[in-house]
Image (cartoon, rainbow, N blue to C red; front, side):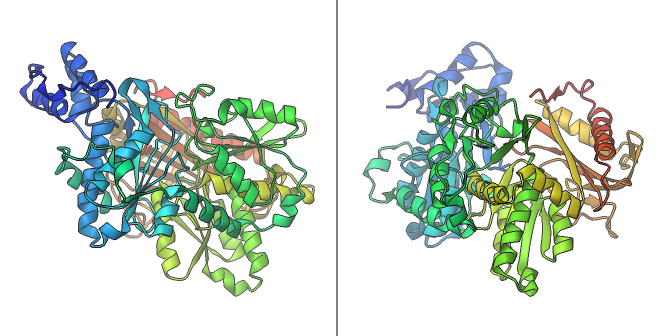
Length: 619
């Protein structure tokens, strides 16, 4: 039985708000939703006369952002719940059936994290089971994991099994109220255009649940359902050794590591990854090693927020005399790293700093295995355009190729697929928000493999009496200091966001972007929302146009690059600044001071937090 299920659910009297168009949506919801908890939420809103809240919940649908469909859990077509997941999967089935004549033999992979919301009876596991039920009722094989898994296991399974697509039920590092529906194509990369738009169209054309779509019993009863957990775990851990370069050294490593799984899925998988690399298991943070959908020991479940949310990990590391802390986010696709410094506490590495280290490490080991310089010609590293340009500096000096993509790992995953088809080898990719991919065994960011690779890199450097932070400084000495500042403001009002970016596009006059910020003159402007780039001869952006999100980049005459963009997963405007200094320029204090001043001016002059009622980052 469904949460609070009323056996007479569909015999409710017609509910009225006084608005005929809204009444139609309300009664549609009541007649279609078999989850008593979410049905009751809509009834209560009607009874309380909360018309605007009903319009917000019922008047729009979720759209695909940088990580699939993502929204708050609860009742309504604009939220994640049983009904909207059924509708999404019905649309998926219709589209997949058009694209794959062999869908009935290839099937779908389905995974889930550990999120849950008691008041709506909504859990990731049940949403995954409903996803499976929709496909099974159409006689499509489903590879449904029997327990929670890291997000990268789904795209990995899609490729290994040869499935048509994959779905992961997760909201990654979002607040506890959220959940999501992440879709992967047959190549193991997240879907991009035109698949996302076509799936949405198919969802809108198939909103009424099919008679068997609610039949969760199919997950137990159908012979077309199988559990890929054991096979995928074994394959993954075996293939992980392709990015393990010093296993013998690892077995003798005296370093201790602490790992936090941030109340999510990562604990047992990171333990097994360490074993695959020859390490003893990392020391788990006991308060955070088991799933907890309330994320009760952290202010937010995102390890990217730094020392304040890593408090339990750092204190445990000090007690255990462990020098390095590794923290995977709740779905284990991201990785934060901190290192104890001799006299100044802990160094929490930014995503850009970790990328510099991992990029160096992957290149070092590639060259050890491929001494012929000509081999480097087919090597690539990738990064999103808002991430550090440090890999570009490595590429220019070392002779490999570097390419940028739009923000979001779906662009990186599809680019890797495109390059490998032509015989190229992508050995490292990243996005600044602590998303890393070492090698290309998965076409998405992977915190599990990255944790083991960072541990091995630290173990190797320890034999040279070098810390991670010292090696980072060595990299900057050789390739030039790349200093970045990244932050965000929260804006819960979409019209305000639109007004802010419209003002930037008409700053000096109509159609004229800003020429200065904080007294610093702007050399070039790139606006991928409109497709404009002043640095190009034809004034057209090389990166694809993305009209559905806002992103403007300013290149300053002093070498600083600054980008403002809307998040694809949260109600945030993010801002990124980086100073790319040439090798030999060592006046770190003046570089950081100049970057700090410009970042502050960018916030105050371009975003105007007080005027626009923006919430500044508090952590």
